Length: 320
Image (cartoon, rainbow, N blue to C red; front, side):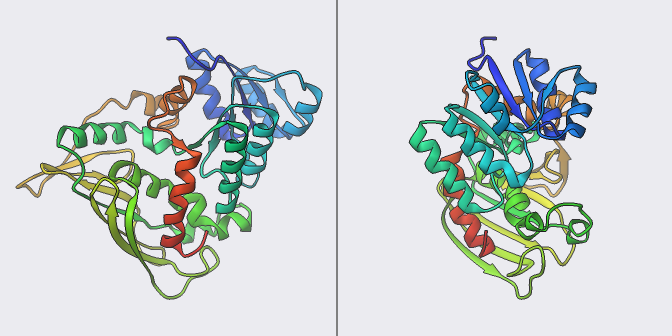
């Protein structure tokens, strides 16, 4: 296999960096790891027997100003995603895959977009659920049945679990954008981004979303599919996407699995598909990283697409 990006940097040495390193090792891609603190670096070095440059990307660029890879994978903490990405763009990196959603605030995404435009850089957001085996099988069945007629998605969050997480209050306060958009992106990827959308909010929010914990709405996508959504963070539920074609209903719930209900039936059946890569690696990450390396960007979320979708995220959440 001929790869377009022969040399990469992974920025960050935490768990996501480990997941990316597993993939790059399998693909036999040369890469450097640039971390910040020693604790994560030691863990990474022990796992892969590979040196980690510590001290952060700023210090690294000052020390090795003559180095420039073909591309970078940004796997730092959420609050550093946008600043690190912009730094790399200004340094002259032309191909960047940044962990989702690219920042904590939506205005940070616009800043990345503007810098990428000015420096002619390709920036992609790592919405890896687009590359799940279940998603790709769903796409196959959708195309086989002449496209999506309608779809529905749910992005209920378990706030009783969120409050236990040892993460920054800023991240919790922007939970819709940093977390719920994972499933919304998948729904729009399958059914099309909105052409028109009407959004409604229930009363009463809280620490994790000040406006409300109850969301509902509907619209029509640019592919001509009618869609609806709901989420109630005060009640029961889970992430899910349901897509209806002329022949069947496809159900992703959990998103890693695919069920099908055929027309004129009420019985749901699990669909078999090749999930070997999703078993051996973090689901979706292998094929997404491979697509990034080979400049096969048709299924990747571009920074311009993320900026466009933020318009709808703002309407759905009345925030972010």
